[in-house]
Length: 394
Image (cartoon, rainbow, N blue to C red; front, side, top):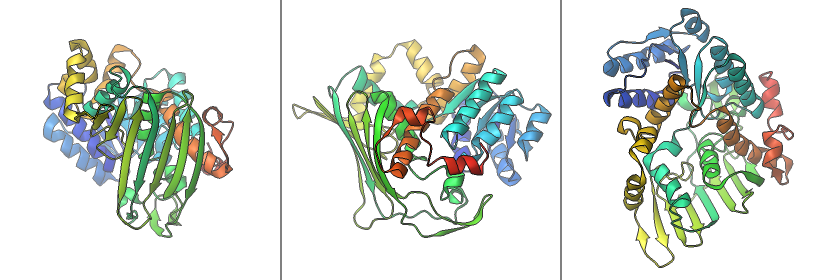
């Protein structure tokens, strides 16, 4: 496998490789690290050598990597704007591909990646880590199988604070421009929320959203664009209605003063689940259940009960080699899907569906009216995305 893109998020993927290998996984070897910033690629290669023994070869471009036939598969960890520009050549070059979230910078870009995987007969996996952590799987089970809080009736996600992005940091140089990232936190950390709420509650129906950009910083030396104003949303309020009738309210700002507020409550007919972690990463850090009779069920109790419900076969599939880190599990799932010919836990279409919910929020804000999720998924509504597609000639 090749690691393509060796910046900030790649560090978590490298840690996932190491976790698997230290647990005895020999199903893959990392043979290449690829990044136009060769120093970053060399840093990752050296880190991998510490637990793998052999040091991966270093490449400055995808073309060089493909020409060298250095890998059978690629783990793509580049900025959002380059997902399709990297994944499609890799697929055409014969490599299986896993793409970090979001699948593509727009719906059209995402569909282009999926079409390439189908054309070239390669496995396309979606690199979503949050749903795979033990606490997240346990809370999903508590809602679905255990029905610990009964029928979920309302969800409130609220995160407001004063925490402007530091655009002097390399990891944020591209995160302030919608041409490079596709949007702000609705698209970035919001991709995790968009996946998890569909796993939990099914297909969305309609979204109403307002959003604003109060940040007036200029990003110095952004990739491709040079000096450019920060134009992604930093404040929004969305109401998402699901086909089931459930309503989810989603509020965020990093530009408001006062005491920081972070709330993620899932209200049911028999109790409430209170998320213990960052609200946009549902249940990654677990949750406490407060039941209708006043009793409290701790996160540890939920996880223990869930673990006891699993067969040995389920444990091996969901937590390979005993791993509970989401990045390690997504890597193993990708590798095992290639080896066995099965569908990955999350493939390109799963990534597209998560992507579409984020885009529906944007499209609703631009339209100034409710927008149907299906219309965005099928490309019938794309006013927000069109300038991005035009810029990248998608």
